[in-house]
Image (cartoon, rainbow, N blue to C red):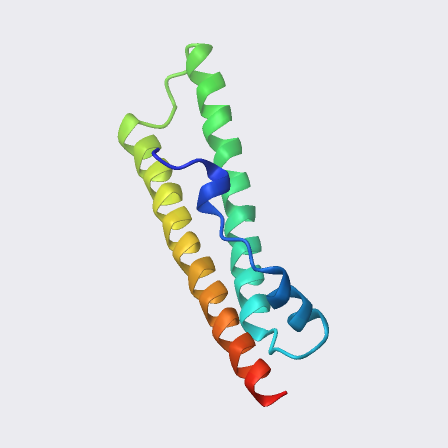
Length: 107
């Protein structure tokens, strides 16, 4: 990866957060994104647990483990989902900044 995790997570500006917390901005996009993220991260938790159990089984000589293809497919899906969520987070942040500018014009 060429970016650190901190660089990949867009942080909403303080003025955007203040506007949202004071009800000057529609919070629906934030709520939708939060629901999506929660659902995805719950699924990731289950997948991580399955992959860890699979590694333990392999290290103990079990033969009924995930194939390399299956493991790679799960990891690839999680990686791609992270990219999609990052893009969605950027879109929500951009939307919020535009709405904040609109709110400022009307005040």
